Amino acid sequence: MAEFVYPPVIRAALTAFKALDLRISIVGAEHVPATGGAVLVSNHISYLDFIFAGFGAYRVGRRKTRFMAKDDVFRHKVSGPLMRGMKHIPVDRTDGQPAYEAAVKALREGEVVGVFPEATISRSFMLKKFKTGAARMAADSGTPLLPVILWGTQQLWTKGRPKTLTKRHVPVTIMIGEPIHLTEADRPVMVTRRLRAAMTEMLDRAQREYPVKPAGPDDAWWLPAHLGGTAPTPEQAEAEDEAEAAAKAERRAAR
Image (cartoon, rainbow, N blue to C red; front, side, top):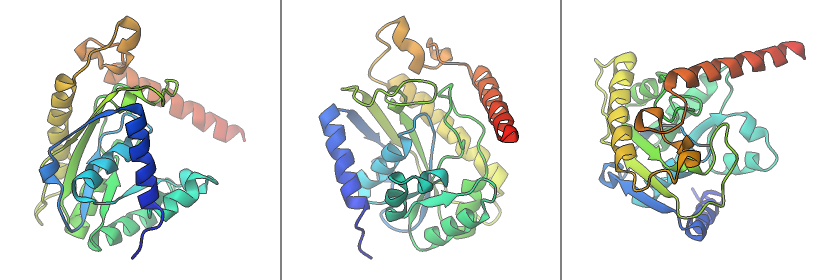
């Protein structure tokens, strides 16, 4: 079936990448399956991650990724038509079952479905706890998990920092790991642990092989604390997330 929205969006992204001279490096391209369904599982460090995670699969095999995203984005007058046109999958956080079923159906039909198992952006830029949805979808659809690690995207736009969408020459690493094929004996919780362990190793490699260092103390915010940066530690980031969630709950209750 013809795609009328995704191709021009991809062309616009490629034009932006070129204009900004982003230094995009794709590692592990050979792991992208040429055909068939796959659950693309990515870390989450930037509001732009869906663009780059999807670009990794597209650049290698012209695979178009259908991302699961909160339904607020689909209600926006600008992003909504684009998201629907690209066949992304809206997720209602009060009832995620319809989105889950839509994702499994897409996977069985041979689509690549994109998932951020941390659910929200990691302020520490390290991996947060993973939800088991990706592993369950892979099991129910009989498709592999495709681990993807992004690094460098946080410099463009991330939580708690101003947008720097015009920043030029930023290196962006897109690392694609070996697909994880499930068996009938595999349990989602154990598969999720295995997936997170694999992605932890990939993230460590991406961070340590990244071609640039912070320009100085004021530029160290994008580097994790254990590597000498000034990003929050995972514990500090979790506390900030909890405080933000509590504040949102209070606002909702006051309405």
